[in-house]
Image 1 (tube, rainbow, N blue to C red):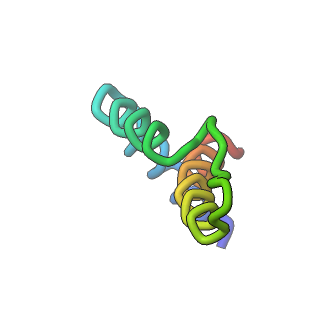
Image 2: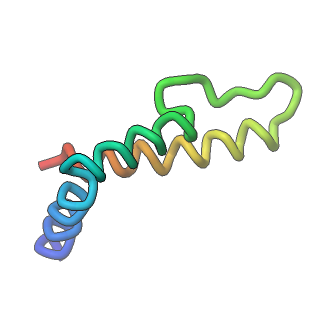
Length: 67
């Protein structure tokens, strides 16, 4: 199982490295509130939706940065 996880981590890094991968990751970060707030005043469903998008970017970064 550990080998599978390590291989997935390598694949994430392969996909999001290089010029095209970095540009796509930057685009996803800007669309998914990576460094911003996910909170939508007065709308818990919208907040949950925005936090779900943010969770995807956090997962990508975690897969690329964990050893």
